[in-house]
Picture 1 (tube, one colour):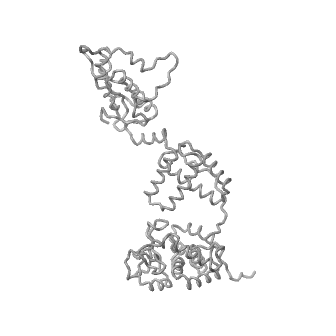
Picture 2: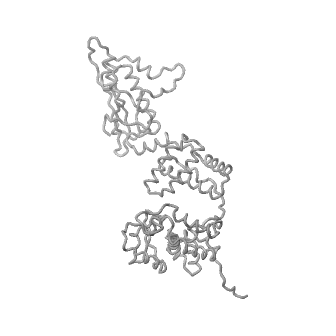
Picture 3: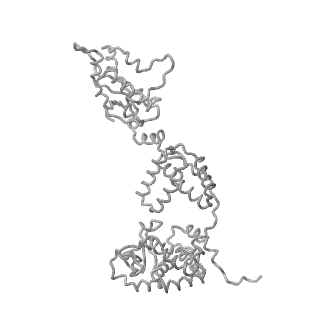
Length: 455
């Protein structure tokens, strides 16, 4: 670092004049009072300036720095008429000086800092300002601050000063937006963390939060809001992601959620697999009353593409020559662009739409009347139409959803002899273990009518 550089401190000391003074013991005169009583003699000024340091041949000291000192410029040999030695010394360029060990070059490096305090002309105000600046650097050095390593200083600042929950929330949200996390997921994260912030207060420093604060919050919510196990665990997962982000970015040293207990999950009642009878009733009703919704659910059944992914499906991602549909990574849940084969039954439905006649940017299921449209359909457009079907057929209380078509498709695949790897590929899962977890809840719908071998 070049000399005379204004090295920034990791302390709240831009207005160094306002820095708090260190506590004084009884009958002890402060350093400021001592320095204000110093007689600005030529001999003392000469001692301040002429003293040279040469640490180039020294071993690394126990402390990697020397104590900061105030240097008051060149020696004053003559005091003009009408002036004083004190005023003439104050006219000089002062600086705070110390030496710090440069590990890369294995030598002590001189650091000189002014922080623009030489603009002060009043002798006593200038002395007070430089004394406070010198003290600020002393405290910073004792606290581990390194004037030659800004990365280390950034870490130190996070540890010593820290951020509060409100600031952490903004950083967490910005991170996920830049990462490309789905808006719905960001909204879920924000809801969870905001609930935690409301409970503990947004001004609470993140580096003061332990597993006690996490458990206290979760237990309160579970008790007061009658949370089920799945709700408790989902909230814990959201908080774990939040504090894991803070740990990775060095705002905290440990994730306080890691050791917090979980709750036993009760089997979910949503997305139930259709019975064969109910499935026939639904498809017959859609065939007569809602051709759009019928095509939508057929797409789910034959491709296992998720409802949201179907909303975003543009014609340019349908390759009739290769007989595949590719959901782009920006839309896909797992952020991977994986092609899906078009079944022969579904191909017959797509051929009726004459896709090749439309602009490739159009959406396959954007309109209830024309199907293909320049604009995509609204978020719950298909589901609301399916809900009308359930109401009309008296099946609204059976917890059927659009995902039920996907689940029925996988149950039928399994019963038809599809391997686990084939089902994994059809669902675009990232691993076989993910498929195994997914099928656990569906296997209760698999019935075998094969005879048991006789004893």
